[in-house]
Each structure stands twice: as structure tokens, then as C-alpha cells.
Length: 582
Image 1: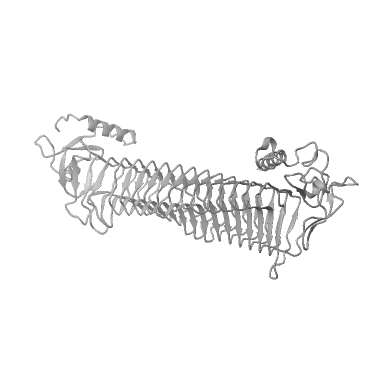
Image 2: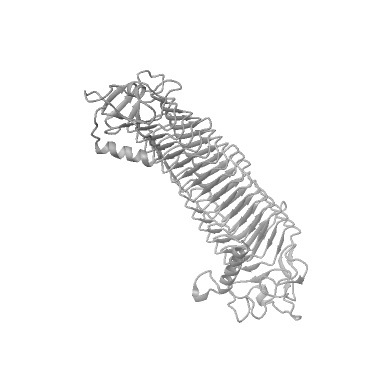
């Protein structure tokens, strides 16, 4: 063997290879390939055939027309990198590099010309602990892979440019425990594709202008982190894939979905991602259940976070959802989920919309400046809306339409531009323990809604109620109080019964008719709200309560519109209680 003077580039590549874990073999030889008389061989395949396991093959600049079969442990690297070293398939129907051994390294080549139905530029078949790094690919047309792994485990794919191909990187047939990092995939059908492969790490890759940035099908327990996917149809897509972790990715400007879970993709964790400029920021559909969507930012999409079609028992928590063109968070035909602790603001439709979805808990969210209602329930039953703050929304704070048997409790609903709470064609709901204050049109609006129980709320609006009836709409048998019983009411009094009726001018029923001869916390008079709607046990003002002389009676402190001392106390108390309960 001739003595080789390594270029700086070659030394750096070998150093990287060693750092990635290439096994050192004692007495390994170095073989050179090139067109000069100093080279040992003129083809890579001849060098492979002449080598022993553990040898290093150094390839000098040039274009090599061949299909290389690698069946032993080798390190194959170029001296000057992919820009100057091309390997083009001599037989287009075959793989350019076909690797069937373990501990193989291929680094620093431009590999192209594989156009066969099942051909790949670099193919690892039952290969483990191999490294593919700093390779580029060109001229590879539909429908093949630039890099394809089949039944190959514990490999490292890093620093490759796998652009302009059907599949940039494809893992098939139980290719597990591989690491795919710092690769670039542009203008592919799919940048990175996994089929029936698990425990892989996919991180720090840049993917754009593809139908799919990253696509997993029937693949579980993978980690997708710190990837950037942009300008694709779908940024990150899971189909029938479970127990994966999707974290700290940035997904933007997708034609359809930013992050999408489809067809029974269950028990996945989606956290700390940023989804912006997509049609759907984060999208779960077709029976994708038991997923956790936490601490993500979904903004400037059409829809922020969208759960649809029997995607049940999911958790949507602690996300920042803002400035989306439709709903911020939308559940449609998805049941038994939890929507909690989200900050939802400045969306063009509802902040949180629950449509045809039952047994969902909407808790401890902050909703503001949404163009429609802060929280909207439509044709949804047996849900709990608890401990939310809905303020300064352009329609209602909390709205129920054709929704029954729901519980709305412990919410702070104030300064909304229409109603605090509205019930339309909604029956058998319970509204209790809420602070409903300074809403522009009225505190609670009802139409064609029967058999609801509304008690122990604090109303402080210029118009506290609007009960609309017609020959077709009754608003019958609504109850505005429970049977009087001992207990601390929302005013701090000692009896539970009806509601506390205040107005910003201090002339609400509980203020102007607040005689309470027996000091039981209940006004001596009943309060007629509308035809067939009466609070028989309206709460009275007591010393130290919200409407007493010792506490602000509802007028704004310091003339700050819509913010009062009792509201501040109520908000702090309610939300502290919610956090303690957690």
C-alpha cells in the first residue's frame, strides 16, 4: 500500500466517523481509489473486493459509474466531499450502494442514478451500527428512496442532503433504534418516512416543499424533536402510530396540517412544538385517542388545534393558541377529553368550540379577545366547563347551543361585548358558582331553554338577564335557586339558595331589596326575572360581602372600566382554588 497524505477534509471526516462510534480494527488497512497512478484501484467495487473487514477506503474526486455491493465492515469516505465525488449507478435498476454488513460508513459522496422500481441510492439491508453522513443525492426520480433501510438497526444518518426524490430517507420492516439527525430534505414526496419501525430518533432535520415532511405509518415509540418542517402539504404525519413523542419541532406554512395524527394513532405526546401558518396547526382525526397535546404554540393558522371524528380521551393542556383565522381549539365528534390550562386569544371565531362532543372537561383556560364566544358548546352534552376566565370576547363569554346536561361552574366571565353566558335551545344544564360581570349586553341570555338550574352565581351587569320567549319557545321550568341550605355562598354568606344580583350602579336587586330580617343571607323578597322565571331565594348583602358598604359595590375602582374589587377577589379566589385542586 502506498503512503497516503490525507487532506484536511479527509481527516475531519474520519474524525467524525470515529466520534460516531465506528469500531476500530487493529492493523486495518487504508485503500485508495482514483484515476491517478497513485491510487490503488480505479473503482470502489474493486477496492471493496480487495479489502478486509475493518479497512478504510479513501476515494479521490471524480465520477464513478458503478453499483457497489458492501458485504463487510468498511469505512468508505471521499477526500474532497460530495461536491467533487460522484457515484452514479451503472445499472439504473439497482441500488448504487447496497450494504449488507454491519459497521459500514459511507461519507462524503454525491450518489445518483437509481431509477429502478425498488432501487435506492444507498440501501442498508439487515445492517446495524452503520453510518451514512454528509452525502448528497441528485437525479433520482419517482418512486425510489435516496436512503433506504430495511430491517436495519442502530444506524446513524447525519448531515445528508436527501432532496428531490420520492422518499428522502425511508425506514422499513422493523428498522429500529436508528438516529436520523441534521439532514436536509427538500422537494420530496416525503422527506423522512418510517413504516413499521420503532425506537428511532429523528431530530434537527430541515424539511420543506414536500407532500409530507415526516411520515410515520404503523411505527411506534419514536422520538421526533427539533425538526423544522415548512411549505409542505403536511409537516409531520402519523398514521396508525402509537406511543411516539413529538417535541420542540417547528411546523409552518403547511397547505393542510402542521402536525397530524390519523387512524388510531394513540398514546402519543405532542409537546413544546410551534405550529404557525398552517391550515390546521395540530390535527387529530379518525379515532386518534389518549394523546397528550401540551405546551405547544399554535398561532396564525386557520385552525389552531383540531380534534375530529371520534378522537377521544385526549388531553389538550397548557397551550398558547392565538390569532388563528377560525377556532382556536376545536373538538368535533370527540368525547371524554380534557381541555385545560390553555391561553386562547385573538382567534377569528370561537376560542374553544365543542361540537357534537360529550363528557369533555373544559377547565382553567384563559380566553380573551376572540371574535366569537370564548367557549362555545354546540350539540354537546354532559360536559363540564369549570374554572375558566372568559373576558373581552367579541360575543359571549360562554355559549351553549342545543346542548344539554352540561355543568358551567366556577368561571369568571366579564367584559365580553355581548352576553356573559347564553343558553339557546339548551336544557337541563347547571350554571353555578360563576362571576358574571360587566358584560355589555347582559349577564345571561336564554332562548328556548328549559329545565336549567342557575344558582349561586354573582351577576353584576347593567342587564343581568334577557329571557326571550315566543309561541315556539318557552324557557319553562328553569330554576334559579336550590332549596335553602347551610353553606358558604358566592357572596360569603352562610346560606345557599339563589343568586347574588348586583349592578354596576349599585341598584341591583340584592342591593336595593336586600332586607334580611332573620340574617340568614337570603333576601326577604323573591326576585321575578321573567315570566315563569323567578329566583325565590336571592342572596342578600351582608357585612363584609361583595355588595356591602365595606366593600366596593361593583363600581369600577379608579374608574378603570369593567374591573372591580369584588371581581378581583373572585378571580383570585377561583383560580387559586383551581390551582390548589390540581
